[in-house]
Length: 298
Image (cartoon, rainbow, N blue to C red; front, side):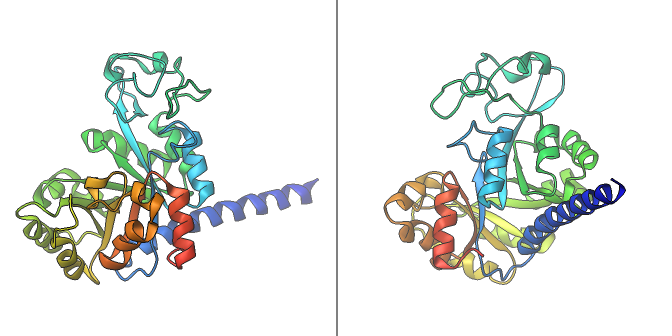
């Protein structure tokens, strides 16, 4: 019996170390500006197969081999942080009304809806529950979380997940330093830049000087814009480039819908022509399959 207990402890420790190493490996890739593969970000986790922002959707993304899950944060009437994209409960749950007008106990009585607005067996998770589940398993991009960052950071420290977190935003470099300060030593911050707007290149140069981000999320409406190629050259060997393929005006028309017809013109264009090394998608399995076929994912 004693030998069996020791064996079980060894197996459990090995699993923990392996999981921890997995997250460390993804972080190492994010820190490599010359990365020779493409990281996959799943928007609201695997919402096509499970309710968005649910534990089941996170679990599915992890099993799929996704590198980062994007999750959204809202706060309840009694101050609890939960996973929820909208300010209201109507679209994604069996409840009605604003999130900040419901207590957590009341929200616990609701069920999540799937992408077809059908009630499921799944419940709304708290941010803490999601962090505990995802610990050592996957990187997490928290959206809409900067509004409550002090509270978020407390949960990150409590759950031991600070090294797994990516924050993004459209603030200036000075605003980022003022808001996040020393937290930037723990939490990865990526600027969001609409590169087809005036002053975009100046903004990137300012970030390069003051923060040296590991990556930028770049947005542009049409591929007639020449700036994406200029940004590719500017950031080469300095920072990774993140593009979103959720809908057409985020990546110049090279989105998931185009990928259904011709993935080379969608994902391939962003990778080969514009230097993308991080892609956020609503179709993570399709993107993973494409990247493996092309040798962009190991």
